[in-house]
Each structure stands twice: as structure tokens, then as C-alpha cells.
Length: 207
Image (cartoon, rainbow, N blue to C red; front, side):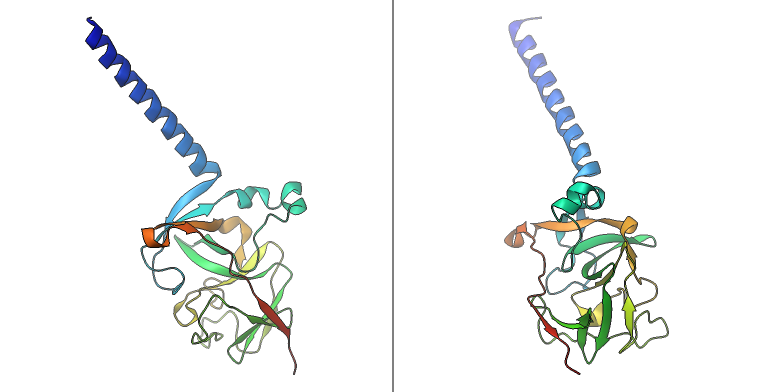
């Protein structure tokens, strides 16, 4: 084989090895660190829109309840946006209450541990109501306690969201969570890290 043929063969082998390594790294990342997700629907508007592409952090799922997670407070928190299994589909919602919290919806307001929650990440025009359907999981004025290892979640678009207020979602068990949304890579004008939606003000209920 002439010198040119040898160079071409070496280049092909190098490209193949690079592709194999890249594929192996991608598989490891997918299985242990991050997975891509596509937003389906309008339940998280205005913060997440239909057909946006996100990355979900899986490490919280397997580190959060270890000594590392406990020591560094590395676990799911109120305000986190998560992807979780619900039946045969995956849903994207925001954590409102965690295990041990009490939650109540009354007069278009959310009360967590008997404190009124002020959510700065959603417009004030969005009303938060309990469900009045026959499929209700949480009704107006009722206080329920989130079991340990579970979460109460809602969509940011409260008037158009299938979430923990309904019995076919209810509390989300930790084992059904795929991970925490941490990055948006499409559309490009929204490219970047996604911060937790902080409950910036929590006022003690006065009744």
C-alpha cells in the first residue's frame, strides 16, 4: 500500500475511534448525568413553551438521599422544575411542596406549612385554584400533608395544567422522577442555565 493509502486508512481509523469514544461518553452521560427532554404542551407557560428542548440533571436522583446529598443539601427543593413519569408519559412540573410539608389552596393562594407563598416566577394574572372536578386530589381550603419521599407539583400555567391537584397525578413519588431541569438548549435565544424558581416571599397567614 502506498503512502497516501496508508494516510487515508489511518485517518479513517482515527475518525472511527473518535466516534466510538464520543458515543461511549454520550451513553455514560445519558445513563448517569443528563438526559434531553422536549416540552410537550402549554402547562408550564410562560416559562417553558411547547417544543422547547431541555437537559435534565439525573445526579440528584441517585445522590440526593446519600450522605453527600444530605451534607451538601443536594436534593430536590421547592421551586425546582422536574421531569417525572406519569403513566405512559413524562410530565414537566414545578415542585411546590416536599415530603413533610402541608399544603393548602385557598382564595387563589398557596399555603405551604400555613404560610402564604408568593411566587415571583409566574405573572400575577395567573390564578391558582384547587380543582373542583370529580377527579380532584386537593379541594379548595383543604390541608393535606405530603408524605416523605413524595412531592406536590404544579404547572406554572395553573389554569391549564394536569398536576398534583388532580387524582390521576396526586403526589409524585421520588422513584418516578427522572431528574431536575437545569439547562435549555433550544430555542437558541433562550439558551442557558435554568435557575430554581424561588419563593421570594413567604408571609405568615393571618386569619
